[in-house]
Length: 272
Image 1 (cartoon, rainbow, N blue to C red):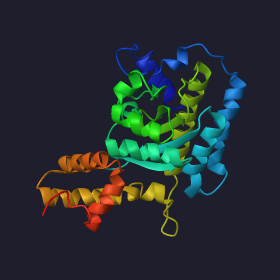
Image 2 (cartoon, rainbow, N blue to C red; image 1 turned 30 degrees about the vertical axis):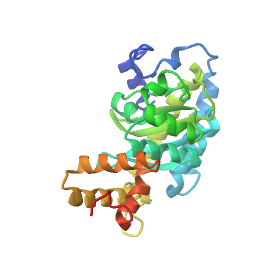
Image 3 (cartoon, one colour; image 1 turned 45 degrees about the horizontal axis):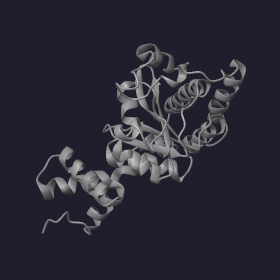
Image 4 (tube, rainbow, N blue to C red; image 1 turned 90 degrees about the vertical axis):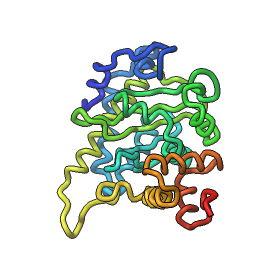
């Protein structure tokens, strides 16, 4: 298994219920353990996507496979781009895509902690209780998008976190022990599949799929808008991005939507 065992060894049971995010804990709580053979078959279904179609569509197939083998409503896969920003490669449905965009817009959510901690992070009920207090902005928007619970699994490869596998459910619930263990193995399988695809040797005739060669293409508008705000406001990149996120939150829109308005000069941030 790639990565997952190292994460679990490093963090053990994780923090207590009052000390921090719920990670690693569900894997040790009750639940009926899945038979090893059944678990292996489920993970094999994910890794089999490497050979089942065009490489360009691999992230989408991996998301669909995760939804088939796990008790969740949807999934998305994000990786860290060269700038350090999260880039969503694919999402199984509109709600999963919206969740990924919400976390990128707010700079808040489970995926950020999963990457920092190199451990799975769970929010079993975003409608009330401690998960709402932990991620107040994200919780409100996640529930509005149709996600009452969210689970973020780090994609670990050779000791480095390359991104996250984010899962959601349409009603509050914790993943039982067997399901969390399977989710960790699914994350390992996704990391392996993405890593193997990156090792493919490109050539002039076929440089490879866009999600490998240009992973940050989807955020070009945000980068451009950030640069424009730096000039208009006379601030650095981090401050410009913070202003962009603040504007998006105030208007209940995504940071990408606000970035388009900045580029089109339909939102001048009150600067005349």
